[in-house]
Every structure is written in C-alpha cells, then in structure tokens.
Image 1 (tube, helix red, strand yellow):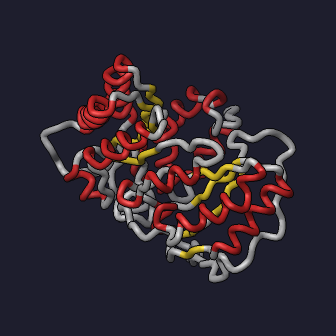
Image 2 (cartoon, rainbow, N blue to C red; image 1 turned 30 degrees about the vertical axis):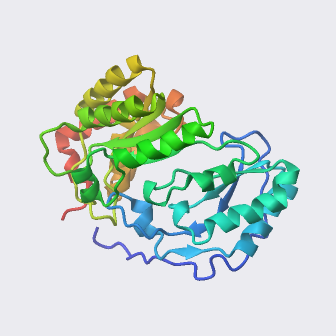
Length: 325
C-alpha cells in the first residue's frame, strides 16, 4: 500500500552461540507440557509450500554443548521430563545421532525422554528412533503432504509408499503399534487423472494393507503464504474443501483409522490474514465489535459472526483484500 514503510528482515547471527538466560515456567499445565529445545533454525530443503522454510533462512545449527546446557536448564528450572528436539527438519541436523546419545547418557538416569518431530522419510532412521525411545517410546510421524510421486516432485518433497511401508514394517517388529500421517488438500498441483482426496485414501490404504496397522490421519487445507513460490496461488474454497474432507473421513474411518481435519472456515480466515494487506485488519476489528473473542480455540469460534463478515466482503470480492500482482 502507498505510504507504508518498507519492512526489512533481521537475521540473528548469534543464534546458537549462547543458551537463553531465562526459562519462564508456566503457572498452569500447558497443552504441550514439555520442553522445546530448538536445535536448528532454518531448513535446507526448500519445500515450495512452506512459509517457515523461506522466512527462517539461512539454516543455522546450535552446537551440542549449548544444547546440553539448555536441556539441563529445562530439567532443573522447569521440571520437565520430556523434551522435544525441535526444528523445521530435525533429521537434517548434522550429528543428530551423537547428540541424542549425549543427551541420553547425561539425563536418562533422571527419567528424562527426548522426542523428535515428524522426520522426512529421506532422513528417517529407525536406529535414531530407538535412541530417543530409550526412556519412553516416541511417536512415529510422517508428513507426507501429498501422495502421488508427480505431485511430490512439484512441491519438492518426496515420500514414496515403498519407503514408508519398509520403515513401518521395521518399526512394527520393534514394538511400534501405530503411526501418524499428515496430508494437505488444495495444493496447486499439476493436473492428474486421480483426484487428490482419492489419492490420499489410496496411499493410506496401501500402507495399511502391507503393514496391517491402523493410523492417525491428519488432513489440513493448504493456505498459500507470502514469500513462497505459491504466494499468488488461489486458495481452495470452503465448500470444495469440506466435500473433499468428508470424502476422506467416510473412506478411512470404516477401516479403523482415526481422521482429524482442518476447519474450512478457519483456513479461509487464515488465508485472508496471511496475504491480506492492512484492510484485512478491519475484518478482525469488525468481528471483535460483533462479539468475537478467543477464536483461536475452536470451541469459541464465533462462526456466525465470521460467516456474516465473509458473506459481506464476498459481494465486494474477497480478492480485493489481497495485494495486486
């Protein structure tokens, strides 16, 4: 918009050189009640849909000695007994296996367990998962995003069915009884004869058939984000998204899989707030004045208020809220 000062991105060049001096302790039990140890910032992979992958460049790692000091502070000052080794792509941390060995040797005697977020199949190692499960078994999570090879090439993230099956079979032999998958619908993918919702169902059923396991399946709606190659992509409308999500649920639940999905209304609001200019803030103020509060909690989401606002701006064209190309 005219008259707006240009913003510049700042990069923390000292990341990883010093452990934080303060570790706030919540006064109540939080939803994710464990310590978050950021082992790396940035990501080397460049998935085309991922805002954080572009925003947090360049990739920087914390040295192991800094991480050991941070973990000790989490345990001594925060009382945590579970700590997540967090980053955008933890499997790409060089020397991850040695880091986990060091942390286990230092803290397993105090009944502290370390968790890994979802790992790329290309960097996945069952031996590594065994290491983080020495004290408490860690979950098995695959962020597949989209199921077909051609689509995966388009978004620059490849996850083959055969590789997933091989990993899960080995995990099952070592005591794992389930796994979690993350998918997205609405990605700007090349045209293929198979519909994306059918492809997702086919992927899960193919893995289940070959491993005899049931899965937790999470399906989100793609929201185009600024600073990514997809920043000008069209977002899937709520009605189409709801129909696709209902199809996936209806096909997977009867086979014993648990399915959780994004709310199409929340995804649409996220899309407007992600790419809209200063005028999008007027919508938030209007919702607030209409009585909307605590909308980040789904049980408090005032759908009638937001639907009314969206219907009103739809008549003015929702596209007018977005920056012009």
